[in-house]
Image (cartoon, rainbow, N blue to C red):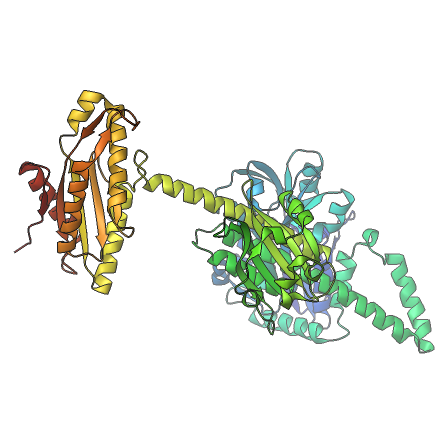
Amino acid sequence: MVGISSFSSAPNRSVRYGMVQLHPFFFKDENGIYKGYMPDLLALLAQNEGWRLSLVEAPGDELVQMLQNGEIDLLSMAPTPRLEKLFDFGKEHHYATWYTFFTRQDLEVLTFRDLEGRKISMQAGFFALSELRRILDGIGIRYEIVETKTVDEALEMLRSGVVDVCSAEQLATLGKVRRLSFRRSPVIFATSRIFFATTSGKNAELLARLDKKLAEMNASPLSPLPMLLRRWYYDDEFTFFPQWALWTFFSTAVVLLLVGAGFVVFFKKERRLRLQGKQLQERFEFERFLSEASRMLLSEEEGDDVLRNTCRTLLEVADARRLLLLKSTFASSRRRSVDICFEYAAPGLAHIAKTTEGKLIFVSDIPRKWLIDFTRGKVVKGRLDTTSLKDFFPASEGGYFLFYPLFEGGRFWGTLAINTHKDEECSDTANLLFHSYSKMISAYLLRKRQERRLLRLATTDALTGLPNRRSFFESLSREITRSVRRGRPISLILCDIDIFKNVNDTYGHDVGDEVLRQFARVLRKTVRAEDLPVRYGGEEFGVLLPETDLRNSLQTAERLRNVVEKTRFHIDGGVENSLFIYLTASFGVEEFLGAQDSAAEFFARADRALYEAKTGGRNRVVAGNRPQ
């Protein structure tokens, strides 16, 4: 159903503006009259223009279609690539917004991953709804979204326990959320600036006029826009300056202006409002950083670049002196020490890593109370020049440090160290930022550890511990590419245990498996550290020899053959004086021929040489036949 309310009778021009109800941006009061920030802003913009303004209410998708068909003249929207192709947008934004999550006190949402399996209420008709679906679907989260007509309905569903989480606009719901004692998540999304939009190719002069008036208002020191924002978004119940006190202030200011004292009150108030605006902007920047950092840490990008990039950005956003990522590790003396993985410092400051060059920081140098707090997941705060660490960090003198512990699953990994500008603790907002980011790093470290474990399982032969067939051919392709690029030789040895079936038939497969493990150990001990021994079949093994020509690889294969022939293979677990057998193996050797050769042909030639060795009497080394 569409409702229209006219609030100007000027005869010259009809301007129709469409909007979904969102208190206090745009809503109907008990008398059915539209009120809110947007009606008041439109009234200001329409002054002296001779426009006849009408407000049109409908669901968001219907309003978009109405604007496209020319049935309304104006909408407030966030420009996206798809919408910019359909509509014309103004150049001056009139509103900035972002969405977050609210929960009851028994639940905490620190990342999008915490929404797994949750039921979420959210007002329909806004871009943020599709943006949330895109984010959650992109990272594979299971969820259910319950769409409501108003924000109040969505919040009531959370209060009554129908849903687990409510997603709503931050500014529009601040007062209601505080009254209901809901917990607000640091995660934000759908951050955008809102512009006027018109039907494509129409109303260009209307957009231009609106942009001009908005620009004039923003540039004026007496702009009515701050008062308008405060009227609708300044929560009297939760602020130090309620509405009745505002009128008292202005009345007193008039009297004080007459005696010359009003200027002092005015500038104090203005300074306080600027401070609040700065704090709001700081929080917005922090939440935007956390949203972007969570996206980057969940990406598929490899290496430490993700951590480096997010840490560098954090230093800029938090305006700190320096940031360090410290990892707990073991020194050559097997004593646990602390390494500086990487460090970022504000311009003009020397890097601590350079001043500590040649020094090794042992865990024993760190105060015992700090270590206990680290293992318990507590944040450690204090000055380094009051501890034994002052000799390691001379550049930090005069600075206050905060250490946020990092965990890789249940194992303590290290700390995120923040060096502040002042000799005091950071603000609650900044502390929440650092704490949330340290939790993100811990989740990232655990995910990478699990990925490495899965990769190791996928590329290792479970019986012998050697690289498996998949890993072998990946390494073969990689070494061939390096050989062609550098013009260096590379050779391949394929070997097969002679008549291995007799071992399985005579002693059983358990003994056969033990013999294969012993054979793998012989390969590892005999070849060089830079060579790659692999098991690519049942009793089939190979050795990839980088930087080795055919002559040297034949010598290596002959040495392997002799070692295998002389090795006693124990058939009951390798106990002293136990039963043992002797085995022989056949070897095929081939050298890569350069850019005109291929990995498949290279392997095939070595395989044919191995076949020749086995059919020619076994226990032999045969070189591959060169193509004519």
